Amino acid sequence: MRPTHRAAALLALSCVLSAPRICRAQEEEAYVPGYDDRFLQTSTPLVYDPGILGAIFQHRFVQPVNEAGGNNLGGLDSGANIGLGVNYVPVADLGFEAYRSSTNGDYELSVKYTFLRPTRKLPLAVGVRAGVDWLTKVEIEDKVGGFGQLLVAATLGDVVTVAVAPTYVSNTPQFRNVWNVPVALQVKLPKRFFATAEYVPRNRDLEGSVGQWSFALEKAVYHHRFGVWIGNSAATTVDQVAAGDFGGGVTDSNIRLGFNIVRNFELK
Image (cartoon, rainbow, N blue to C red; front, side, top):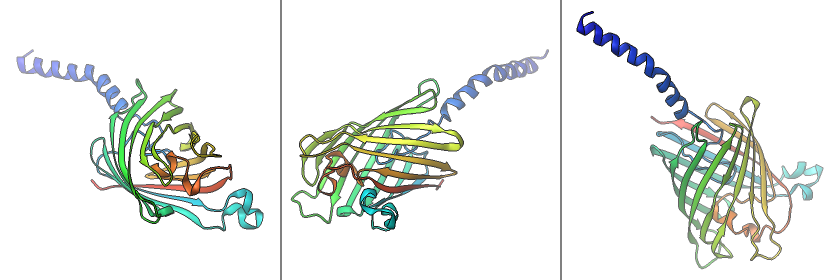
């Protein structure tokens, strides 16, 4: 065999032997745990792929189900708290988001970085998120506050994801220097359905405060994610959620309905 042929044969053999490793690496890189940029209200550790523009619309009906009755369709005839947001990922693992809640004219600007992406061998994700909230429609001394979050999510058996988001907020309408730890649970269902729940512990410094819970049945379809939501608080921004003082305080278990719509656009 000529040297050039021998070299070509060795190269081909090397490619064949390395192919399984390449496939495994690609499989790990392409691993999708089920969640995207956020769960329900709480951000996940992940950002989208570079060049993706994401848009989110969150709708929370104002009237509680137990007050509405059948004539108001469980609160569906009432007004709503609306949240609109966009986020963009210019480079790998770094995302920027701008979000506005109709309640108190609350603007939230944030940046998120993903330190660790999950793989099939290690289905663990770690990220950090920081930002500011600006309350434009409420008469308080400090309308602008900052926040920081450590975001951790682990997927068990490629079905169940458990997440925690230790959170610090400098100020909310009623409190200063707030710490809380929202938790999330997501279960993969057949046909790209997901059952997602969140819980935020009560604020012991707020009289009558209760934990904030929410649940949604979600469906993912080609760059879209739609979720039918139910919960006892319409809070959507970090400063609204952390202290439990949204709307004067989450002090009862009145149940509200709502929905989330997420749409992603490829700009690159």
